[in-house]
View 1 (cartoon, one colour):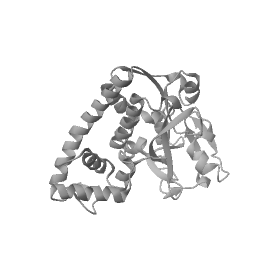
View 2 (spheres, rainbow, N blue to C red):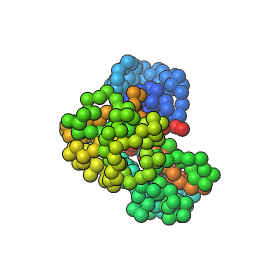
View 3 (cartoon, rainbow, N blue to C red):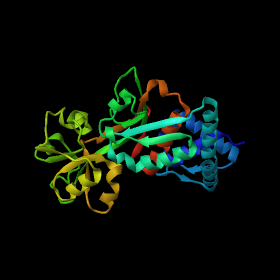
View 4 (spheres, rainbow, N blue to C red):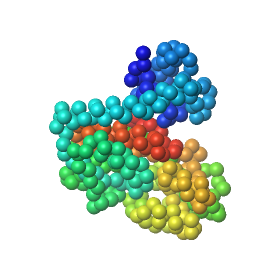
Length: 306
């Protein structure tokens, strides 16, 4: 007999493309997941995916199981959410703000799915706290903030969403465009386009420039991702942006992306809420929906479990 855990495993393999990433996503070990797959294949009577393929390729049996998982698991999640809604009387509001405009690429589909599952929760955006939203959470004007700035706190809880690579974005003809990776020294003669945020909060400064005691020649603040990209294509500066935010533009040949440092620069994204809210059913649902949607819609993102 098939079990829910088997369907979750199949869907995780499809979403992440590897056994190791699936184990992280399901909060288990690779060995435990491998054992579970062998158990599933024993029940099915045949392999469910082809070993040593990247990305993972499913067998006919595996494709059937994946279709079942995609049909059944969302219904189970929605039913569980509605039961919790009734049990806890979770009617209310979810006022949120984001500290990164690039987040709209995955956040809008997540919000749409959340609204379907939780129609009684009134969800709204607050633009007053753009780029610096934690004060709004502190003052009670917001219920949730999408942020990269996690810190130790007795008042706030930070739910890990996903990790992703920050890359330097240049025009295709830029002098740095052909480098294999960017060093801090490479940026000392450049105009760096950034969101209107203090440099100390930006990963390119925290993890690349400041440790090397380097500064770009000039910093220009721009509050929209599209405007940053237009300025980059016009050779008015370079920018550090999430790789998933610029994939489409690079595929069109409009920009070039280069790794920041020899090992790349990994950034993390969190959902911050008041710690007393962390066990609310609709909050937990928003977290899980956000993780699933981001993994399905964005390239080069990874599960985050810290």
